[in-house]
Each structure stands twice: as structure tokens, then as C-alpha cells.
Image 1 (cartoon, helix red, strand yellow):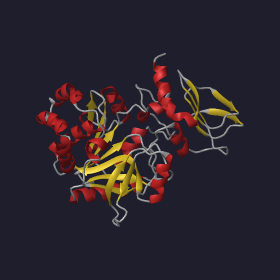
Image 2: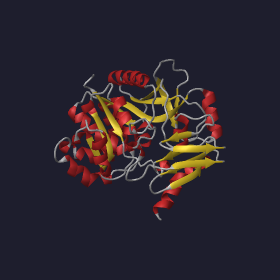
Image 3: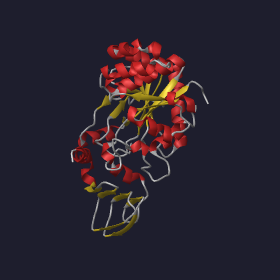
Image 4: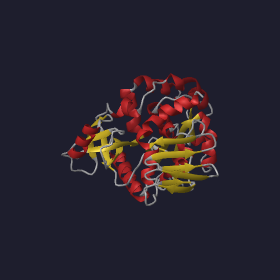
Length: 353
């Protein structure tokens, strides 16, 4: 394994669209959403550790999830867990982690990966990542792994690359916001658009230089604490100063502004597991397209449903089509899959009860 390879594992999200299983106290990355025996963060850590030394994988998460990370990843040391005292989107935490890594190893190349995505072909993922690492060791480049679109999805941002570029790694023309359906269809027909899966690769030199150019205020704030990084004084600096940073994503902060952005079209299947419907797509189904997770069921005249139960009871369903049925200790949810984007709103309503 190359000692210059590093990873930042993003594990601070709440996953509110997977309510009532995913909650603020126990978000989806800490659940076995696939019924595989491993939680999503365990699966992602295992995938990355195939080519990145375990000690070089840093986990970015909220302070409240520190013990969960230590419980689920016992091979990780406390100093590998970077705790955010406030929710500030992806740019500040990526800069924070990048400066820590750079101070330890100025020759490092790193991948930033969400902790809750589904990737089946892990060998293909490793090959793609190695290709990106090699490119970023040789070039001043900010890279992303673009996902081959399979349908006109309106829930993802898109990456437009140069159609004339015959190289395996393409120059990015621009990032495009989540489109409406007709625009998404035109993207697929054009053939030079990829889904933005939020997986980024770069050298620490390239990304810190980009922050210095495009986010000078944020960079100046973290530079004030640079002496304390990787020492016992780091925690106090972060606790005092982190909430002063801008609340901005890495896409807005850097990627959409930079000119040295490249994309490798991914060769692996991918799903962001953002909703119950996307989970249904990836799990085994019965003859009527029903998915059952951790439940004992009797199904009659039922089709296209996802059923999950954490309660030790028989679930009987008759006459439902295209529904999400989730039963846990505190909540029973029976909700149309076609309205799953509204679950975030329902979660907010439930929190007030």
C-alpha cells in the first residue's frame, strides 16, 4: 500500500429521508440499511482500506457521533476522528482535514468519499481510484469520479465534460445544478454528462492551493490554527473557531470556480442510497417486486413495496402498491414511495410532537 494515499470519510449527515430508521441520534450511515451484516460506514471503510492504509483514513463527523464511530470501527484511533462542533457543510471540514494531512505528509494524495453510498463492484472502484491517484500525483488537478447516468434523474447534480476529449480522464467544462426532467433527458442524449456522486480526489498541495485562491477568508481562519493541528491544542482551536467558517459546499466553494477540474467516468455501479426508493432499487425482490428487510411478512395483492421492521412482530399487508412500510419501536410509517421526497418534511413535523 502506498503510504502517500489518504482518505477522508464524510460521516456527519443525518439522512433524514430514511426516517424513521435514520434519526439525529443514529443516522443512516450507522445502520445496516442493506441487511448485509455491516453498517454503511463499515462497508465504506472496508472498501477504502483495500488500497489505503487504515491509519491514513480520517473520519469527519459531528461531535455527537464520536462514540458511534469508535464502536463501529474499532480499528480506528481517536486521532483519526475529526469532530465538527457545528454543521458547516463540506468545504470547511475538507479544508480542515486537508491541512492536517498536509502537515503530516506534504506528498499526500487523497480521496473524499461519503460514508453512506452503495458500490457493488469494489474491485472496479479500487482500479478507478488508483487511476485518479496516479493522475493527481502527476498533475495539479482537482478530480471527481463521475457516475454514468442510467436514467434522467432530477435529484442529482451533473458534470459536463469536454465531448472532444478522447482521454480516459476528461476535462470538466462545468458543473450543472439539479435539472428538471426535460433538461435531464437532454443531458443523457448529449452523452457528455455524468452524475456528480460527491467523490473527489486530489493532492493536498492542489486542494490547499485552491482554497487559498477561492476561499481566502476560510483559509486564513484555519491557517491561524495550523500550528496546533496534530497536537493537543487542536481541539480547542477547532471548538472556538469552527463555527466562524462559511456554511458552503465544496462544489460551490472550489469545484465550480477552478479551471483545473477533471473527471473519470466511473466503471462501477453506484447508488447514493438517498431515499427508501433508491434502497428498494438495490435490494432483492420477490416476484411482485417487493423488498423485505428484517421482517416476517404475509403479502397479498401487494407489489413494488419496501418493508422494513425492527419490531418482533408479523407484518401483514394486503392491497398496497408502491409504498414504504417501516415499523420500529416508536414509529409506524406507511407512505407512498412517489412522495418519498416529502419524508424530510414529515420528519420535521414529527420532531414537534
